[in-house]
Image (tube, rainbow, N blue to C red; front, side):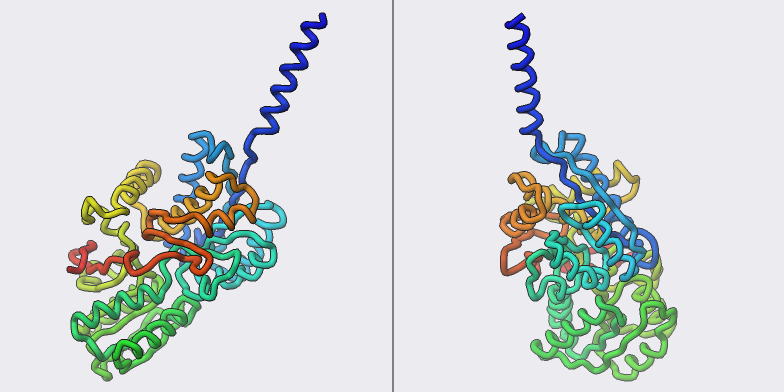
Length: 379
């Protein structure tokens, strides 16, 4: 009887020891514009994050920790994003937040993330999200000043020194306009026209007629769909042949679909390498990662992923990298992201550090030209 009791006690000790050593579940929150005008951003982000969590948990979790996911649809609405960010933190008690999809939403919830000390990994591009650096805030799309510089370098090569800019009057467009004007001045460009349109405008003919009269060598449009697609169609309708550059905010096939293959022919824009993963050289550091992402996404959803889904892929990998090093609490995850070292991601090769919470440079983008309804790399 004594031996049986001793054995039973030993088993109980082993079980309690195993329970104590079991890695805790890590809860990740996400805010995406799954519906509404920015759904072309939020839907692939949501799909990607759900796929990654499913795959991670099927492998037994990350460093033994299972991942629990709480995703809410903001509809692209700033007020809703604020409400849902509070819900993720106070009700769901997440250890990190991925998203939101847009710059305006992100800027609205940054004070919440900072106050509550929850790491926020935004999927929006505005430079002000991480410049200046905020302790708890990171982002995965390359900063818009990097995209602006990439466009202007291409314009310089084409000797297009007189430029017109046409930007949307939201946070993303305002940031892009600011960066374009500052960088154009430094590089010796002359801005001959500076026009703005509202996010819900359905005809930009008045702005384009003003631009036409200024006789620019090139036009740079900065916005997210559907506006840029409308502008592209308006240019064709007006018979304006001036070279049009778009921002990375339309770097998905959705833009070509909305604008039409004919109207978008010859449009040039900076985009992440995912759009042309099959055209990259085999020794490109991102080639393998990009192909694996495309293959897994297509297998799950029967369509190719977009650059925007890649933003969520990168955000998850930054968090996963921290968890692999033992991080489970918000503070540990924040520190793990900041000290994570190099990450070969979908948006580029990240080198995040205390002075740079984005960690991407010009190498994150390729300059692409639309030809016959598809992407080609500008040589």
